Image 1 (cartoon, rainbow, N blue to C red):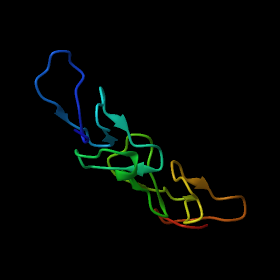
Image 2 (image 1 turned 90 degrees about the vertical axis):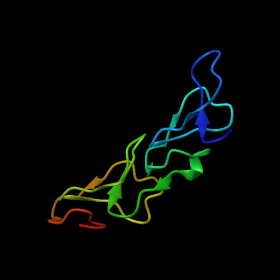
Image 3 (image 1 turned 60 degrees about the vertical axis):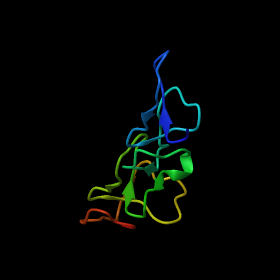
Image 4 (image 1 turned 90 degrees about the horizontal axis):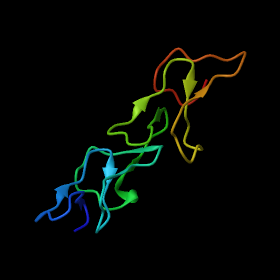
Amino acid sequence: VGGTYQDETGATQCKACEQGCYCPEGAAAALPCEGGSYSSATDNDEQGDCTPAGAGFFAVTGSTEQTPCAKGSYTDASMPVKDSCTLCVGGTYQDSTGATSC
């Protein structure tokens, strides 16, 4: 069943998928949400069930939540994958967390 996995031989039932992961039908292990996405659910059965990080945030592989960008960095809506924040270039600054520009 999708959203579950089983990593033991001879088991009689599947385990719930793990937070930060998805488990397609027949999975032998929970697969981590790709960088730029996250999930706290335990019933995901495909990568598309992981939520994309929003502008001003990032998510590393296997994240259970998005993290705001630190001061001096940002992500914006034009970035297709938000797995890290971009540092402000010389001559610009950002003194807030979760920023979408410098």
